[in-house]
Image (cartoon, rainbow, N blue to C red; front, side, top):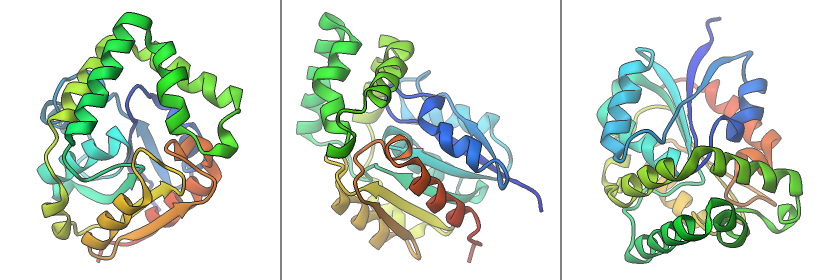
Length: 236
């Protein structure tokens, strides 16, 4: 049986390391490709670049910022997306509080550096309690951010604060859809995922216990298992 092309969209200041377990352990059923999501300062420009380079039909999975971008891709080319997975993300438009938080993060990043921003501000929000002292995981998250750099961070902030409210279009999703989050995700909490799953016809909701916002790295086996089941689903 032919393998499914699978595009994987990382979150803010993340790269292929975010999806390492899934790339390795889904390679028997899919052809995973991790996409660069930091090159443009708007969701529309990113989506158009990705669609220009993508196969004619593909499965699509995004985490956090990547999930927001996945919804933009679906809006533009629903006929090309065979499966959709939305992980630790949010279908709503950005809030005033969210915009203010990103402005503060940018100020810290430019004045104190990305590593300090990650270690002092973001990682405490990212990880479940059980992972909060995992120094290997923490260092990998810091390394991804530092390697991405300020230009990528600026582009992703600009893109995400301009995002539309995707909820009105969710009822039109017509492909097998996985909505997954960590039970302890405080950035994109469980109720946001319940909302998406309720609005998308036939969506499967998976809540991973003992897991925060970086599900693919915190609980990689559970996420990969859920994605394998999702990839085996057939369009209705």
